[in-house]
Length: 360
View (cartoon, rainbow, N blue to C red):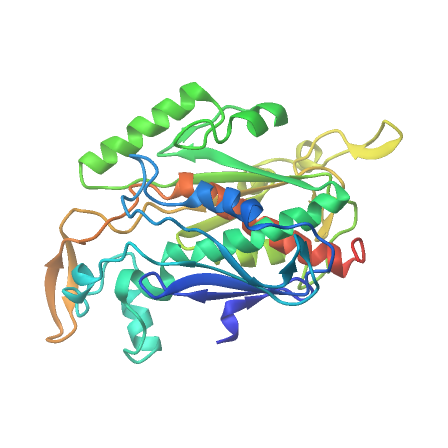
């Protein structure tokens, strides 16, 4: 299944299932001499780890990373880097009861057809958000690589249940995004978001939202148009995160309602450098980075596993029936998706800066 591989120079191979032995990632192509430790990776994993707050799933995984190859005495060697975490807090019993009744909103039915019933259905198997632990591991290494040229990546909860974070400065976002359970850097908005999530949970429902991510200090001209442009490769990777339903750059769909005179980013000189007066394009023109902050927003649907009764099909009899989804689930995936979005943006950009010859 080549669908588990992404990248040309910084190659990421994802593996594992939700209730399998482990989940992890193999990275090939990372240059030697990048300072990386298990502690560096653990910091990122702890940000997506389940069981940390009342707005997340109660599944209590420790998610202690093990680096099995490719790092020696604190530095990458140039060999493939293999990292994993073990699945420990696993209870597959609820899924045994619903194997013939696909859960609405999940990949259960198309996966059963595609893999002729041989797919691991426990906890969603390969289609679970659990696999994003591997994404975060890859992103941790990619961030260290990008740091060599001063690129910084910041993501935060921009919107949850229709409640939007006000426009904030970079410093406010950097300092406040992990200061609360919902990962919104504005405290007042964060409290409203939290209440909306808990209200949905109490009613047996879920809510969705938007993660905004920016890459700062990305050099001009990064990207490989036309089919590997920086925004097309980022979109492909971001849509690989479970529950993602929308990706937009800069003004995105809002730009469709503007005139050209309103939407165009006019060029100016600033500090001896070519900049733009606005950044409606989100730092991308023609599939290449412009030198302005790359800004992308990622839309997540409401979590599909809810406690309300829903209609489905009993595949053993091919008759309509109903289901209440068992197990432990997030009422909103957005807070735990923040480090995942950061990670995915990081490993795509790492691949592109290597392809551009900016890091050796």
